[in-house]
Length: 221
Image (cartoon, rainbow, N blue to C red; front, side, top):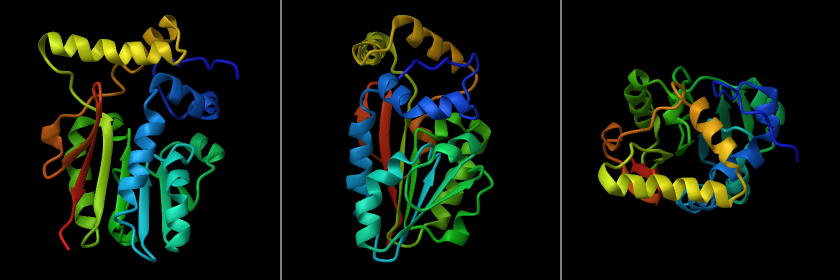
């Protein structure tokens, strides 16, 4: 597959980005499939018979495809939301795809048992994150969970340099050229803002690779 052109300002609302997204994200984030598998494994513990899953920033349906066996076995439904209609054009996951902004989406009306935000919140403006997370928590059915995987603030000192180089090395070894790595980093300026763990009160860590980490929030039964 031909390499896609990286936009000067990164956006998912781009036909070329949507068409090449699956290969691009695996090249830029070599642990992507490992994290997806972790989400599917963790998530199946919170999807009951007849339950509901909301996949935020669903892109092409990666999370939905990973959860598909659980959804089918338990006759559960999935609502995939993304603010990119271009992603809707290439969506190939289960359930219902809806072009929507998570900041205004009515989570409560869906009564979700599981909400997944995979590499999403880092693209939400910082002032809007707290309210979004609070609304997701409030919408969960008792016993439900929210899974968040995102880029986190870089560590300080020498360890921060070590972790950053680990991320660069993984991209390079997965086939991304130095030019592409730099282009992507620069394209994210002003578009992507890493998360702080302070923005995730009540969440527990479940995954980490370099500056990327996964967390879960459980609503008591």
